[in-house]
Length: 241
Image 1 (cartoon, rainbow, N blue to C red):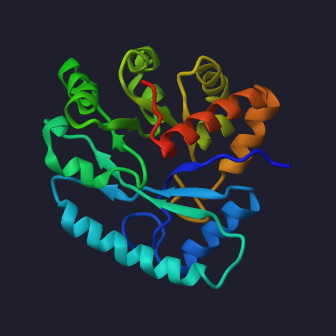
Image 2: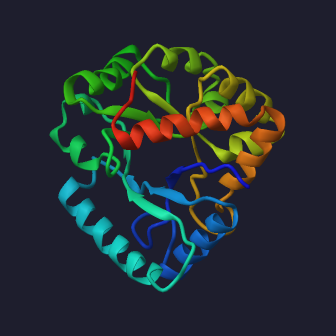
């Protein structure tokens, strides 16, 4: 029996961002998830504070979700869905009242996308302050995307000292060049949640099940058990960081 794992990072809602373009594509993506034994998917469409506001975003998200949920009633064995957002960092995010409206459904966590530029001390302090000021735990989205391109190999140690949860994409484990670093970080507890960051069925397709399988093969199932324990704590409101 396959070990379960939550896909914490997806762009699977139809027509809301640069992910799934329509309802049919969303259904194909969810069928692929189900075929890999993924039974819970967190929908995290992009939220860009400079060009959007929570009210407009939530209305679009609800419309996309309602369309998809209605169609899912006709299909059996599909993953459960939770709603969230991938919020692009901006200066002063820890003091922004709108952040609480974008937390992942049923949790006190919010996914933060960091910029593809050097992270200043002020920026890191701002992210860390989200926990203190808003009682929300930041989930740092796709940590793997910042390490090699920015040559910032100290990121894992920096984040380990912050009140955040670190999510990595499945491609980090599936790419033979990055996999050794991915396994090392996972074993050290520097990666705590997993996600496919799927956008479509071609270039960025759902592949978390493949990553789960290779993690078990290379590292052992204890790593997935640790991820599962955190998933359980997140959805039960028992995060201890």
